[in-house]
Image (tube, rainbow, N blue to C red; front, side, top):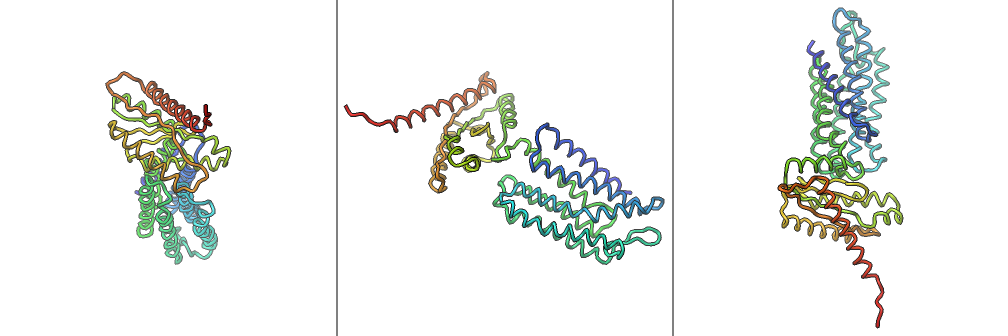
Amino acid sequence: MGWLALNGYSFVSLVVLLLLNHRYHEPLSDRRRSFTAMAVLLMALTVADSFARLGSTPGYPILFAEVGNFLTYGFDPLIILLWMHYLGNWIEISEAQKKRWMFPVLLFVILNFLILLLSQVTGWYYWFDTQGRYHRGPGFGIRAVIFIGSMVYSELYVLLHRRRISSQYVRTLVVISLIPLFGGILQVLVYGYALEYAGATISLVVIYIFLQDRDVNVDYLTGAFNRRKLDFTLQELVRERKRFAEIMIDLDHFKRINDTYGHAAGDAALQDTMRILLRCFPKNALIARYGGDEFCVFLPSMTSAELDGKLLLLDVTVADFNAESGLEYALTFSIGVGVYDPDSAMSAEAFQKMVDGRLYQNKQERMMVREDISRPMHLA
């Protein structure tokens, strides 16, 4: 009955993941909805697998095995389909391209179910002897090869589009896909344990730790951390009395971009801003969207000279982007900077207000310069 303990641990783990995934009272993102769907399906399949194994145990009705096996054979390919849908939320390609990639898996799901219905008569997938014992049918191996091939196909989906996934997530998505693949191969070779579902459950745990828990702190549009994460990080840095620098960045003329070129252009401008910031600042920097068209960058242990170098790099990167983008508008930023002194008694709120004030001052000064340049000269 070792399978019972394995299924029990998988089921409990999935329940905990669902509770954690819904702990915030806010609308679910597409990623979190996909994650929820995978967890619910795995819970149902784990229960169905348990019924199938109980039905093959002496003393339990064979109906358990018949129903359990029908459900697991019929619906476990949906795991791959949902996984492909989840991956699509991390890959920056069109919806049409995502659907084309998912179509072969959808075809497998449909054909598998039709063959399963025929197998109830032909025994092609599986059959039961007169004593109610389960046996793999002649078509089991073919189904297993296609199933594992579909898992490999989902891995290729990530690898071939890795340049269209944010660099901080690529490695995690590639590795996660290998866990259920390994479990699926073992499931074919070793009957008696629900290794496929255990592997998929482990994948969801890893997803939650490295991706989903970040998702609730990440701005969906830009991939930057959101205001919740920003406030928490600022409070933590001040509480732990750490020295850090903050750069507050405001995208100039954002409303004009929206009004003139449309909201899609405005969204693209915000996304381009995030890409520029990722190029300029190290991996240990925290980049967050403060709200609207404002971003904040937290840089740990940054000296004034290093900070000046980063600001110069930002200027050069923005200039290069504008020269190469071919857009009808140019991106320009107003900037406020502050370095937190851990020996000071300044609160997190006071420090943020100071940096915000410097940003506002810089923006006003830039506006005055532009007005002076555009004002016509009057000769005496």
